[in-house]
Image (cartoon, rainbow, N blue to C red; front, side, top):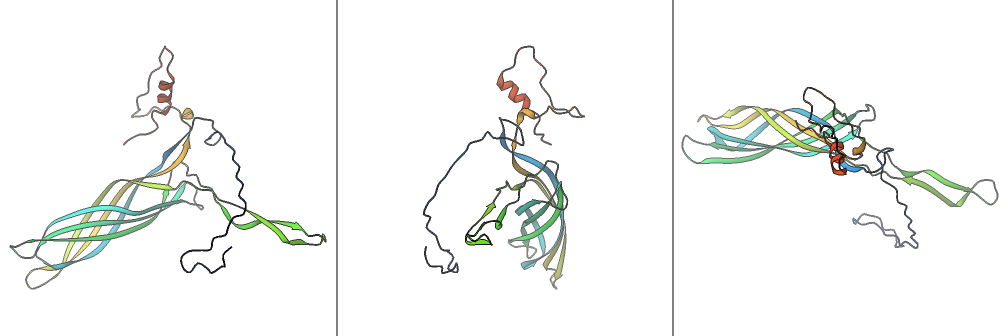
Length: 261
C-alpha cells in the first residue's frame, strides 16, 4: 500500500487488493410478491401545479423611452424530491428555476432598437402530496453492526480480529417532467430622467408550473385491472367469442394505464 499522504491534492491513496472472489445468484424479477412478467416503467407519482410569486428589479444598460417587446422563457435548473419521514404520502420538493427575458426597447422617438437579455432566478421549497407510493430504502454505511470475537483467555474481546456489516440500497430518484409554464406579470417603469427616459423596471410576476413527478418502478401488467367506469370512461375492448391471441391479451392488460389530460 502506498504511504498515506491524504487527499489534499484531489486524489486519495489506492490500496492493492490481494484476493477477490465473486459469486452470483440469479432470481426471477418481482414487483412486491408478484411473478414475471414485470417491467421497469416510469410511474407517475403525482401531477403538480406550482405557483411562485416573484418580484425583481431589472437595470437596463441604457435609458429607454419605450419597451417594444419582452420575450420570456422558463426553465428549471433543479427539481429534487425526497419522501417525507414526518408526513407519509408526501414528498419534500425543492425547485430552482430561471425566467429568461429578452427585452427590446428604443432610446429615442427614432433610432435603433436595443436588445438586452437577463435571467431572473426563483426557488421554492414545498410539501407535495403523491398518489402513488414512492419506494425508498435506507442504507447503513457506518460500522455500527460490528463483529467481535472472544480472545484466547475467554475474558474479553480479541483486539486482533474484528469485522462489520454495512449495506447500501440504490434507490431510483424521483424525477420531474415539466409540462407547462406561464408567466403573468406587471411591469413598473422607474428612475425617469428629465428626457422622459427610464432605466429601471420592477417586475411582479406570477409564475405557474405544471409538471409530473415520476419514479422508475417495477410493474406487473398482469395485475392491472381495467379502468373503472366514470364520466369519461376509456374504451375497453368487448369480449370476443373466439380465443384471443397472447398479443391481444397483453394489450388489454396494459390499456388504460396512462391517461393524457
